[in-house]
Length: 414
Image 1 (spheres, rainbow, N blue to C red):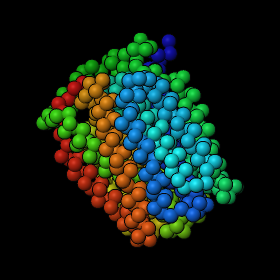
Image 2 (cartoon, helix red, strand yellow):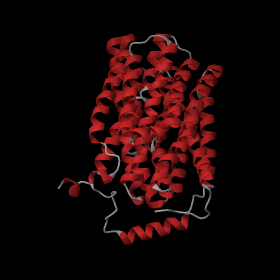
Image 3 (cartoon, rainbow, N blue to C red):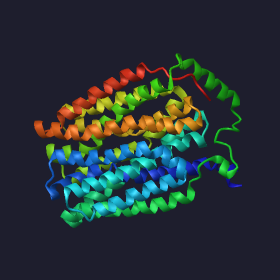
Image 4 (spheres, rainbow, N blue to C red):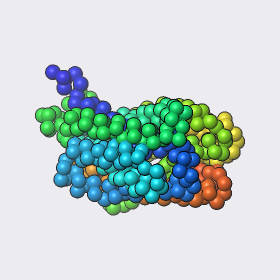
């Protein structure tokens, strides 16, 4: 039978990767490639570009507040479906718009759909995988983000060179239709729990029970001092806030920096963006697996060190080589933080509480994403470059390293 050869949990991972490719890879990260041509066509200022990005995360924040109720009412499967439909429809209507305010409103709706789909799909990891496999599973799902970057890096420059001022509109419309198709595919594949298919979570019947016991005991040794649930959420949330604040500034404005500050052609900038996307495809899986074996704290610290170096190099004004290294460092580690955060919460809370707690923590993440683009755009407008914004990001990730080092989770619960 199929489930003996391939546990259905890995179909959930595949569906999750398609979901993240759609709601974040296209719904969020394609904006970095679309902004320069859209900004030129509509004569947008840096501040207006930042507001469009911030509007997306205002929608994301709204989804965070409603997501738990949405999952309870519709179930994870249909909550994800509804979220992807919102993303696809709003992106398609952006392709028909030429007014800043309308685009900002529609992209806010995109954020609502992205938040609903993303938070819900990450919560499924706790249902479908045992503790020792969750980091790897979440990491494989997050491969979808990198694939979305690759797709936008390949398609947008070609569209802009072929259709000139209308290229960005065709890009939004194409991506919107792709997301709607993805919604229809994933709703056929998702199942809310293994029990729906008379299965146990992946890893439940492993012949490695001895290894599991060892892993759990060593994990318990790492978890030194118990803390309250509220303290746990605030601490992890603060770390997640700093990630949201910093990564979104880089993802939103690095192509604009290349094109407008360093005079790269859009095609060359797109190639670099695509290369960064290729590097990022396995970032979640690699660092998520690393955190499974060496601890969540180690994985988070290592990723934040790489991000700090990436932001510092982007701020250094040392030339194109420094920018290439910066994008490579960001790419290899870009999307591993959400995987490790999701796995951390799933490790220390019962399944029925993990999804709700992830939603609370994501509230901090969304606040960081809201704050970052508008502040970075304003600072760039005042200074004439994004150097100060990237330097601020580097300082923020240093603080994230300190908070990660001080982290003491709840007593471990298998």
